[in-house]
Image (cartoon, rainbow over all chains, first blue to last red; front, side, top):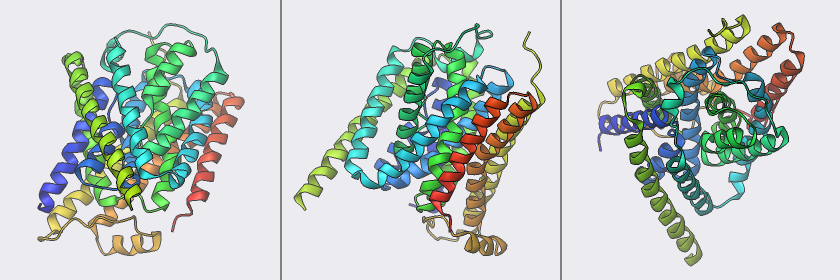
Length: 267
Length: 118
């Protein structure tokens, strides 16, 4: 394959991840990691390191917009970041002791969870964006929230994802935070959480610069394009497409995990 | 009507917006440079360069070094956002949240120390 084709493919991968992220609130890592491991044959730790940088690119622009509209609960976000960053560091260190096949299996399970939770969700991120101001609320169960945030951070640091599918339902269902505020606050936390583990991956040499650059550029372009298209597109169809893609990727990742596990046992 | 954003919060928005834009522009410049100077060579996939080598490669005009600078800018954007949050809460006289933000910043510094960059 020519260099031009490789770079175009990586940019397009980023565009797709950024586009899904902006349109349905789920993208980035859940697409980038499987695409890099299954498509390019990259070891999972390289894919995770690369994805974490892309996750920062996806979240920063959206987080700025949410803070500007005053939908983000900055105080709650900062308190929960205490737990997400510690979790992210734990996840990035734990990866060193966990076999690749287990991480791939965990990733496949996360993909299944994310696609099921997306099927059950009635309000999409795009719809959340265009409705009015968030209602007043009082945060409850902060201790439970801190525990959940630690888990979300660990999953992010281990699998290279933003962790929105864990944080948003947790804040919305257990902490009494309106969906719109939960979405905005989760997005606000993603960059700092990803940075906490990304520095570790970077120093271990797991961030492949030549791959990260084109994918991150594509992610940024896809996110900008998606935020423009969101009010005009029926997100239901996009959601269905993403659910099918996630199921497919989960099946492939599970297959890889089992194949890797079996070949390791035979040796 | 939504009240106007406070000055400290505007810093947070500024850092998030421009940090990611500048990093992306830098990476895009590097990617275009890689395409322009490839001359039939394959993509040089490898770990990030140590800082000293990165500086030398940058002076020599290596497009891969330019991409790496963009990646570093992107990684530093959330760190600067934390600095802005500390300042924002401090200005609003919300010392407790300024302290919380400072603690998160210290956790990130701890991860940087764990990382021991080359």
